[in-house]
Image (cartoon, rainbow, N blue to C red; front, side, top):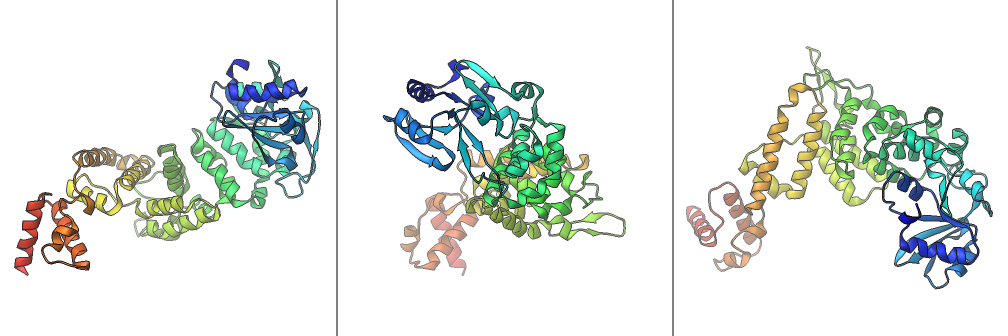
Length: 443
């Protein structure tokens, strides 16, 4: 692994070793390297206490980001490297953070306190330190707690969601005893700060194993988003569906691109259905206005989980409009481009494609239609078709010269944009001015 350690990390290790301290890469960077992946972050565990770490790397900038828990962030080559003292955690009275930590000179003691075996490995002086079978668990593609799962989760309830997140992102199974403890202790998540829950959920949703984790651990998901629980018992007797609402939701998440916005939207897109379900005389279920009802529910969930305002607004809009079909007609699509802009239109197509893939075979004929709409949108944009006022060949000053003033200018530009989108007038300055004069002569 030594050859895989970046120079900026080696620089920190060299200084610590030169000062006489044991120091080694630990945790996720070791795991990812063993999986053949490039680590995003490099963490070092060291025998040195924070002040001693700062002395050893005195010529490098240091940020005291977690002194109480032994962490100093060293800036090496402009890149952050977290150096944390070997430590033993005390009791966890809040099920989240240790009440106190004790620094130690023992690497094994430090590894023993960590959450999962795949995260409890270190690389020390050219040798892999793997005391709990982390490498074997990587080979078996499983997430397993270090020691007793119930003890690990009681210490920090967020580890329950972390187990699900790692299983999703790595596409691993959760070892049976660890999985059983996840189910039993899921209520501990109610003690965790909402923003931490939201951050783990966001990573989970983007993983390759997201649908499997949502299906197998729905009780955990319902603990952090109780508004979704009613979906599990909400049947959909309809020619368009072969799952209940929760089964459809899970399939729709899997069918969406592995990015936060579409997957989070698909997780919440039918949140209003249980409140809107009606059954007609033939036994067919209907869900009238479920998108309209679901949008404010989705907003409430996302705000509670402390997602950004911009993300909340986009997801809410996606939930509200996921049933708004974008038919492959240039005039219709031009109007949607005008109404929503290109980015949201393509976002909406992704939502509708995922929604369709999660429905019955009777609905699959919509997929080629959505593909045609997408191709047509690309064509309109490549041709620089006019769908906004700023693309019009006339400006407000051109209309002012014709005697218009104030709000009348804006109204005239909107009218001309309508004419261009509807094909009643080409987007050419002379033609637009002539068209406007002609319209004025009729009134």
